[in-house]
Image (cartoon, rainbow, N blue to C red; front, side, top):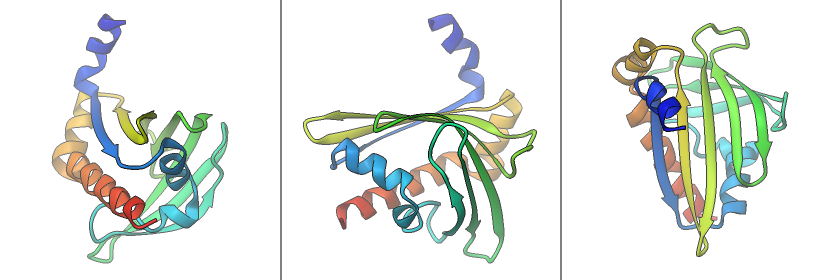
Amino acid sequence: MIEAQQATTDREIIVERSFDAPRELVFRVWTDPDHVVHWWGPNGFTTTIHEMDVRPGGFWSYIMHGPDGTDYDNHVEYIEVVRPERLVYWHGERADDPNRFHVTATFTEHDGRTSLTMRTLFATAAAREYAIREIGAIEGANQTLNRLAEHLANL
């Protein structure tokens, strides 16, 4: 297991965050479009959801609207959904995106708090570097999770 993990380190981004909310609530807010539109995306972004069917084989199709007016198409295909523990999915600009990446989001609860671990695996180390340097993937993920924490605090 350690060898396999080391083999993907150069292609992976791992983001961890703890929330002062029970796991059931965090998972629901992550998978309910009525909540997602309030927090998904980095600071200044808004989200329009076209479809969100959170089940194995289901899709989440949405547009992130940047503060500069640029629209970013997104397409998620759910592979595994274990409520309220884990989501596994492919994420790209469209269903047949050759640059899509694999995400595993794990939700664990301890004493009423939820820890989230997001593992994003890219096809190549170069794709990971591009996401970090050109797209700002790590900062964007941190801003998005800050917005999630704020949304949870307001519920």
